[in-house]
Image (cartoon, rainbow, N blue to C red):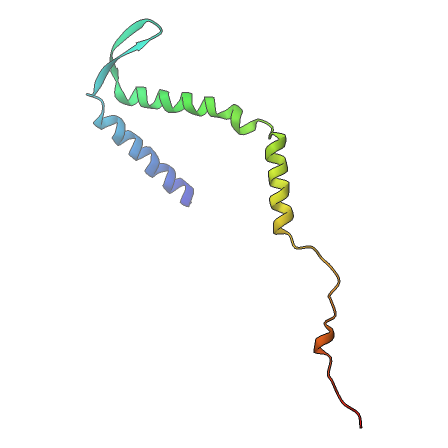
Length: 98
């Protein structure tokens, strides 16, 4: 239910953004052609979409050996080693017998 409310709020914000920017147009140069009177919101959405597509290969690429080694070192530093408890001889009670 909460996700539906957030989705509706998100759609309303996008519609307001589009509504306020319908009159804002500009000319862009794309592959040697000049496109005139292109709405600004359209340019923003296309730019964000292209950026998301260009980011995907980096998200799913394999980690380099350097990163794997660094992560392994971090894990080994954070996990304590289990060892036998050491006996401290100084804590033994010193009772003198007469």
